[in-house]
Image (cartoon, rainbow, N blue to C red; front, side):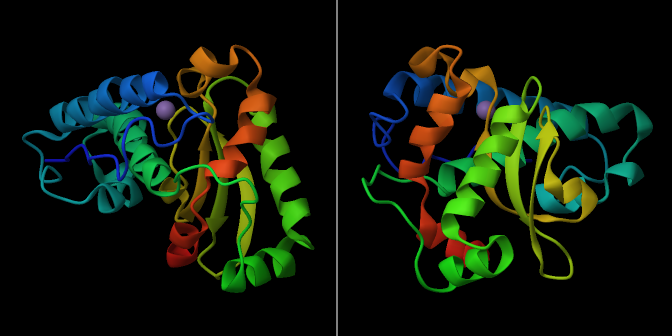
Length: 198
Ligand code: MN
């Protein structure tokens, strides 16, 4: 059984970047529904007690008629579980330091270039999906977007930073202005958590 994790902060902790109302709906309705539907799909299979990471890594081994439901809803569970953890109360000057900063500079040239590349990739994702910073098996970092709830874990990459660009993540606060949401979102990135994942 997959469990819906509690938010590691109050529903209003990310205001004014992300409103309490969005957090309530996003966590209690959207994420909860992904967990319920993934559990329904996995029930009665040998995968019902496995971790979501193990399940997604081995998606092709699941019963054929369960794979789409698990890819979408299990992916949604993995993605949102990460998303809550890599955010925190907004900070005006929110930049990484130490090892994270060095690694981003080494890979992308500068922190600003990294931020621009991930922002543009997430903004440009056609329709619903996520912008990702991932670690490849060889340890290199890379940026891409994936549609729907597809998890980087499906292709063996480790998700480090993910920004949810489904309309449910921002529409109540930013209407159709995805770029404005992403620009503000950088203020809530929890760089301490990112460092742990790196
Ligand atoms: Mn979402």
